[in-house]
Image (tube, rainbow over the protein chains, first blue to last red):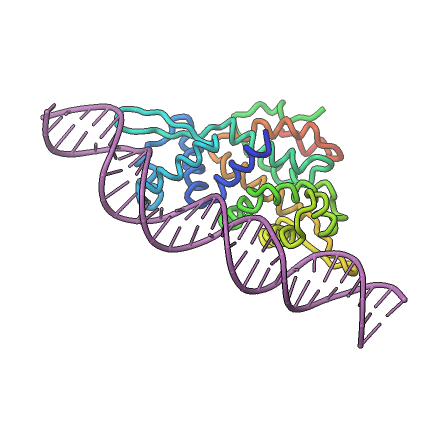
Length: 121
Length: 121
DNA sequence: GGTATACTTCAAGTACATTTGAAATATTGA
DNA sequence: TCAATATTTCAAATGTACTTGAAGTATACC
């Protein structure tokens, strides 16, 4: 992942409204959520405001959208989020790996993952 | 990790100068680097400018400083960086774990880590 | 004490991000 | 075609972040 892309992504998730949108859409999974539903779940923020933030996130590559009738459905772009986590770890892991300590514990909580992938050597 | 703390940390690393400082200090390890040395390694940015960014990073908890004679030595705060990675993964992993995909591959590159920690069941 | 070095703090200017409400666009169904 | 719904786009106002250079603080050494 390029530095510039990472910078844009970090800027995208450094805003409360946008971080909450991301969390919401990750939980929603591939189905995604209507723009209006997102606005309502975000303490009924003004639609134009939510639209602004959705655009930022989409331009950062972290979410994507599709039209369904009158609605526009947004969903998380999982590979991009995965790249971002990897960037943060790799950028900081070069040399030594203290940065990964707490992430390792989280893998144990992951369900639906082949455990083989977690075994090193 | 609290949402607010994460937001401040993401804001901190969403700036090119600061992201480069972080990378530099992670590579430097516990020894850290003098403020002046950092400035020189950053294409000789103005000292007041580097000082401004070091302060942002320190306030975000990502780096710490100690005085040594005339110099001030900055070093990465590894637990905070580790927390941030974990926040990003956990925040997005709740429910399902697609976000962790690429991070797992990186663990294999980590040296000096007991492989047992990577084995799940 | 005085001077040099290493940094930080401050104030001013500039640039960028966010919110707001009104107007515009797209789609549906009567 | 018209009205209703769902959403975006736009322009203006406000707020926040960044850079710059000059002045200030801390330490060291003569």
